[in-house]
Image (cartoon, rainbow, N blue to C red):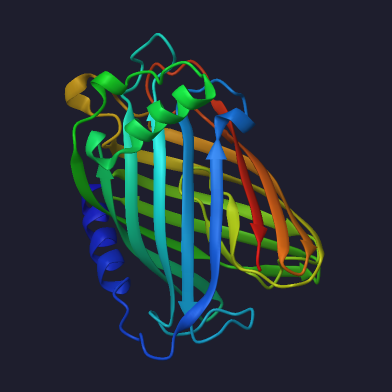
Length: 299
């Protein structure tokens, strides 16, 4: 896994450099809010996160460009990882990251590669925000904040290869493989199925935690699209589960997800998805269920 990590990090950082910046404009924004409040409501482990992606390029016609750097995604992401209430079964981590990812095609293969600067710890302000929010809504104080992971900064890389098989004008089957290195060492294989007229020609992005596909560039067609997906991963080291503190990640992880994209009007869309995450650390008694939301208004 360590040699794979080095290759992935080098590839991600070099490919994410926008070498073809001229002629690009903002094509769209992708957003996704994830929280276990909309899932099993247990306020633990991968308890919440938010991602916003700005997509820039010369245009979008439903197909990725053939050149790396021609279509760029700039991603800002935050996540809260917390122990179960009354335990220290995993350490608290407030995560804030920013990255650049390029998306292109090599023949029929869709390639996504990029790098993120990932900051962890109280210096990110994530734990302060969660404590403030829990106080405002009258919820119990977050667990594990006082003993959270110290301030750290990492470079993390991601490479995904996928292929879209258009079964019909309303059904697409999309298998993929993915490698991550840096904050977590993961090799993943999985697939998604898109069912419906809406979204078949959209530019789709993958959420890091859930694997849900969210829309980076949206069509204006009204209607619905159902998304089903699952994947299996082999896991190496994880910064979120430091061995020197006695934690250990499970050797494998699985995810299963379902979602609904609803284009209500030309400028209004909605998404809700639910994701099952299997156990991530040794000693975790069960998996968890997260819910993901997006409501988009364009004025």
